[in-house]
Image 1 (cartoon, helix red, strand yellow):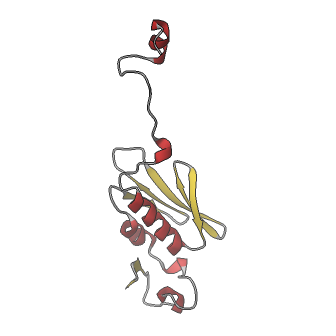
Image 2 (cartoon, one colour):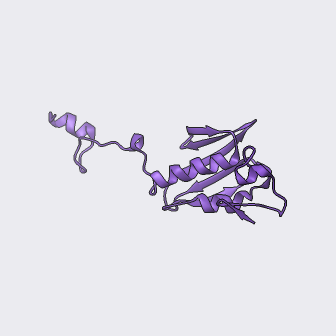
Image 3 (cartoon, helix red, strand yellow):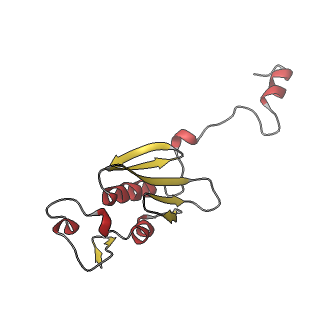
Length: 131
């Protein structure tokens, strides 16, 4: 059964599953189906387990993990925290927004440039006295 973009695992639903009376029950969300649905851009589902859901971009080292901690879900990119949520549903929404904002996996804090030319190493540059 599909409700608001989240696939339910059974026909039994609670008011919270429809946005009334509280958050959706994590136990009723089909993690694999919801994680596939959350993926966007070049991102693809890597795996969905009991406590962790992972996405990746094929042929790159870009990964995004949604991990369960006691009573919260934590979203991480390259082992750095991106955000936390109180429910799996909110965590999937956060992951979807993250992937939508970064469809190719680029992160501004990961980009850098070198002032050397491609055929020179920094030590060659220093030896030649160039600055």
